Length: 580
Ligand code: AGP
Picture 1 (cartoon, rainbow, N blue to C red):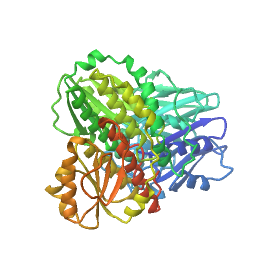
Picture 2 (cartoon, helix red, strand yellow; picture 1 turned 90 degrees about the horizontal axis):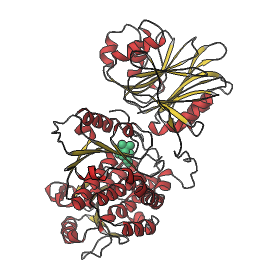
Picture 3 (cartoon, rainbow, N blue to C red; picture 1 turned 60 degrees about the vertical axis):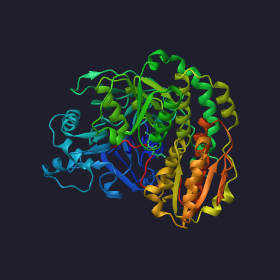
């Protein structure tokens, strides 16, 4: 993952880069650092710090001044979290400094062939020394080194004595913006924070050279090229306005508004889709990671239920190395909040190479997946900051639901409208949560659509409260997991489907017989005694996946905060997983 930022101009660029890194820290917050050519001596200075960019800011000298700065915020892949492994990395002679997002897969074999000393455990230090070892000018060295690298990279490079920033990109996002004050490069648009009207997004194997008053783009053979600018308009930069005690709570509470926006914008948005062509697909195959994969499971259910079409799902990291049977007449759908998830992008590329049609469902405009796919279905969740996805998930589920309904020619607009206007997220659940917070062994169970909610509920709890829980199909319990159930086990049983109510009751009785405690999440009255209850508001069954996940998001948040953790930045994770 990681975020990179670089800036060059006539003013002091250190604050520009630090501000950019703060916007990018959702990509990793293990450590951060900057390298700059100190003005006027033109000496290379590097400052690094473990933890958030605020720690780096405290270390930076108040009077530090530089016109040419690169910076990095890290999610550790190679080497543990410490200052030594934090970027930027400097070549052994001290001439070059680099920041890198991506992975050099062949770094071990490259390292073995190099004679210089290494100070960190990172693949990036190999990259910068590889650059130094090449012949030619700086750009040629960077290009030659890039061809020797296996893996992914978005890099910004500085060389002592040269007032330029050099960029290279393959499979990791990188973009540039400039105005009369100078040029800024970054991993994503959020680092531009309202300053620019448009930006230039580099394609794979392209290079750029940033100077104070211009940017020049090059193709892989270093031939000058022009890239079309992308207009930056509707993007939401307002994430600082936090009135809740966490972004996660803010985002949970925003869900009714998000769904309203989706409802009102969606029907206009989808007018442009070629529905006649879409209807001709015989099958749909979804691919995604994490929470987005759970949305896919819901999306596939909707397509089977309403369109009677064959719909299947794969986890991206599995799909990309599987012996897939690619079928014509199948639409491959890639779901991703960020649109930058490395595994999902690799799968989209794989499908494209086969010449098959692709659609993506993304929340971030101008993301890599949008550039790749034949059809783009945006979600309107607005910027999601908390690492644990909440409003993006419900926006994805709702979007895929409306997509399936439209494809099936079912007019449910009134039902959907009533739903988005009446959905609430502020049920008082504190007394229930207080009673269950002692449990450390928790399983989430459900059938069919409630099984998907169980998977997502469990993911939320494990990622922010660090409780080892799983989501499981209720009918699968007795095939193994029931062995773990005792009187210290809490089972969160989700039951929102009338036709499966009695089946769920049988499963709950099995749990009770083993001493397990039950928290039932349902809109129905069930004919068995449960230990704890979250009564859901009653909407059409196909809308209940959205209704039922909301209390589970609150539940995870309650556990997380009662244990004293920060829900927005869980350990070991990052918002955008741009490495494999
Ligand atoms: C969700 O809570 C997670 N943090 C994670 O599983 C996430 O959904 C996954 O990494 C996929 O991200 P994407 O939607 O940006 O592709």
